[in-house]
Image: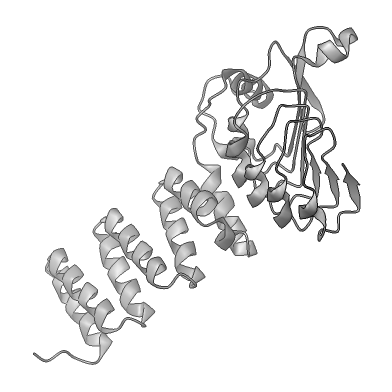
Length: 296
């Protein structure tokens, strides 16, 4: 069987089939062309254009994912797929793809970071801690409508003082406190049962928790813009979640129950580290790290 060596012929055949409304045949020829000319991006673009015109969204996603699987170093198709998710209002998929699956791709360039922010912005927040949701709704003056992650992008810092703080400083009374952006203060009647909802505050640069026993720390691993994290006297025993927080400069983990500090090894930007008051027996991980402010 004779197969033409000019890719343009395949494009023309696809146009003919499209003109007669035979999309299945147009797709078949376009897919054959991508196999015949695997290194020609025009062949892929032609296939995607046909699928988009026919609203075959899932097939477009499959095409992009196949390309990424075969050529994982080609950033262009990561960006194209992320934009495709956004354009088709698949915000959950866009979030998973840019934040959870391939954050290193999108954090390495201005274009990538902008795509990631767009992917994040429209994702609806699903709350696990009603008390934090209540505070944020008051803060945003948004009592009923769904909160999207874009609503939270203006929050760069959160400081939570635990309900048990009063046991150490009785003059404060039986209250806990949430401070947002160092300016807005809200009293809370109890500790937050979980802090996992903080994962939705994608632009957070600092988190400070004081005497606040809670769960959900593992969910903070994708807060890639975080520069400062303090959790003082919070009952933490595992810090594996910090491995991905490569932009951390200040880390405070005093007075917890941490034994293993090996996850700190990869945090090359650290300038301050508080790990005093923990049952740590092996500090060797710090031997090759130049941390000017080290308190152990």
